[in-house]
Length: 189
Image 1 (spheres, rainbow, N blue to C red):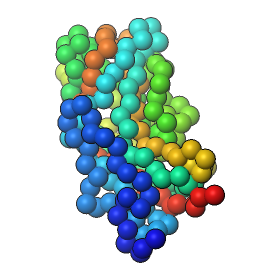
Image 2 (cartoon, one colour; image 1 turned 120 degrees about the horizontal axis):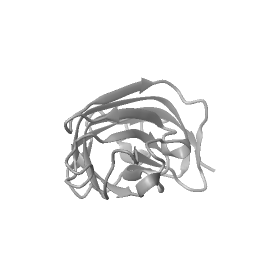
Image 3 (cartoon, one colour; image 1 turned 90 degrees about the vertical axis):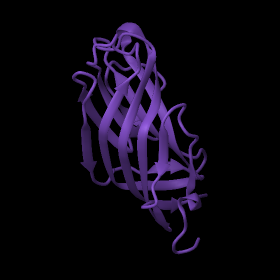
């Protein structure tokens, strides 16, 4: 691969959300084997499924890696605004949730928690909205384990897990902010 490849050298940006946008920033680059991806979110909508007493969940795929192994050297999540869908908290504006970045999209309610592959790229950030507003951020260094996408390519998913106590119905949440992921490709079989 060339010294200054575009992010397409390691994968492709996922489809846009139903509402809002996710932009792979012009700050993103690949100098194989290293990569630096910045996703700018502008009211990017995450569909939320309410599972009553079990909490609620939703995911938004951001990126599809090409087959290959990689490691994460650092992640910065910076969420600057959220907008609750009309039914999410019954207009209370008090959603309490975890949001994080995983190699697999969350597929079941976990009552306001993210674990395992749901936040293995970027650890969960705990947020409680007040009057419908709130922010949150997290900066972290290298992960202790690598990601083996040699047989099945990995994804980058923005995962969301709401608490049973604050989420009232299946709805949406819009996310504004940015996510930066730096890593190194480790090759393919």
